[in-house]
Amino acid sequence: MAIELGSGKQRPATLDGTEANACASAPPSRSPRVLIPLAAAVLIFVGLATALAMTKAPWCDEGWFANPSYNLAFHGKMSTNVLNPSGHFLNAYLSGIKERTYVVPPNHMVALAGWYRLFGFSLLSMREYSILWGAIALPALFFILYTLLPDPRVAQLGTLFTAVDFIYLWSSADGRMDSSAYALAVLSIAAYLYLRQRGFTRAVFISQVLSATAVFVHPNAILPQLMLVVLVWRYDRTQLRRHHLLLATAPYLFFGLLWSLYIAQSPADFSAQFFANAAGRDSTRFKVILQPWLAVWYEFLRHIATYVVSDLWSASVNTSFIFVPVFYAVSLLTFFCNRKIYSPAERTFLICVSTMILAMTFLNGFKAKNYLIYLVPWYDAVLGFQLLALWKRGYSGQFAAALLGCTFAALQITASVEHLQADEYHRYYQPAIARLQEEQAEGKTIGGTAALGFGLGFQGFEDDWRLGQYSHLQPDIIVLDRSYRFFTQKFEEKEPLVFSHIVKTLSSDYRFSYRFGTYWIFERNDNPATTQIVDISEISTKKRGQRAEYLFEQLEHFAGASGIDTMKETSIDAVLRF
Image (cartoon, rainbow, N blue to C red; front, side, top):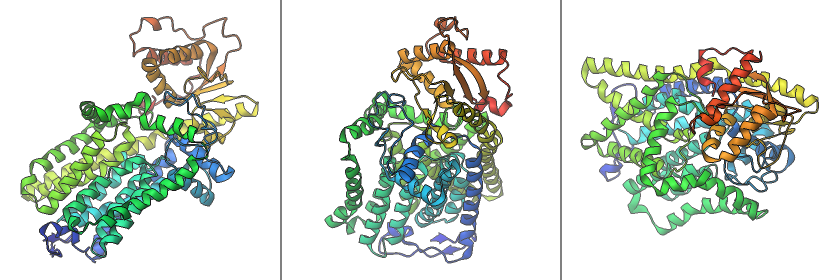
């Protein structure tokens, strides 16, 4: 039996011959009340995501993917013209990237180009595209949970939690492809569940069209398809025939063929770019996958670091945010421990969630924080499941469930509000762009993150994180944003020669001239050999791993002493700074 949403009444499940199929084939209720929590979730999500999109500063990844999309839309070629081939964080020369972009599959960039043609190019326009996909994913998630689980209130609560989830919001308010890839992946699962009794062959084909589209947006989208494999095996394995497998592969072959036509224009550049990115820096992706003990440890670190460690993607907000993964851990542990008392449908959902966690742990070698968008909606659903189980334990359980649910939502919303208050886009990015536009008007060359392209247009500057070590570029102006400082710390450990070059460049060859929050602007020193502008005499005495931090501290001291640190940062800026 299943419970009608919001009423506590039970609705009969439609049986199709097997107990395991009962909940997977239950028709959705036609009561308008079913849609109220879903509609509220979508509205809340769109409001918060749009506010974040309007206030957060762009970062390097957004620039890298906007650049080829912009060029395709308005110049007819998918080139990343502002990225120096030797300047990417990958320790590889990205041959031909100024002419053709092969770093990732093309669907996201091609779709963005079409979006730009329809709605114009801007940072907000790019992010609105991702927000649209994030909003589309919520009804799909709702339908999956409502179809699989006997208590439809799990779908309501899980979708509402996802709508306020900071990681989900921040990823969706981002110009990367993670939001659209995730949305297409969950749509493929939802489509299968909806169509499976209306025609199994059609369910297989439509779901795999959506899945293939997602995979050619980003390969990580293949991981949610393992959940679909669980569902097919659980419910419909007796219907599987060889022609279904052939039909399922057809969409992948179609997109592969289209991409191969583009690859054929320059196979050597494709090999240099795509395989360098697929392997990751120092072949990290493969190393983690091939060493499962590392995969477990790095996955644990990703789950903790996302909520407590500042970085170039989202920075951090406050220490209380660490309680979010605690909520997830306790609810997941309880969910797994009580598996013996669950119905067949609930056990199927448990297997699906477990499959997704294992896939992200052992098959996702690059443990980027933004990839958690593939996991947090399922965590939110499990938390909703456990809170509803607690709710059924009388008045004390209801009080505890309400308190815990409100606390969890408050932690998530607080994270978003604090980032909104920081408003790095208007307070820092726009003033920095205004200053750089003045420099450009004087004919000066600029080196800095591709994210500057949203303000400068994708011309007149070059993105080189190694500051000319291999490219020998010597722009008049260098802009250090959070991403440049972040990878300077990485270069200290991984590329000492590059780090030494960066130290000399920032302390002697260039002078720290302007600071707009996280954007540090340096002007080329006409006589670098005559003096060391910033005192870094003690850098050799610092332990390895502390020298980049020392360099940045000395640069900040210089800025303060020189009177250029005019933008005083509040406490929230202090934690968002690096």
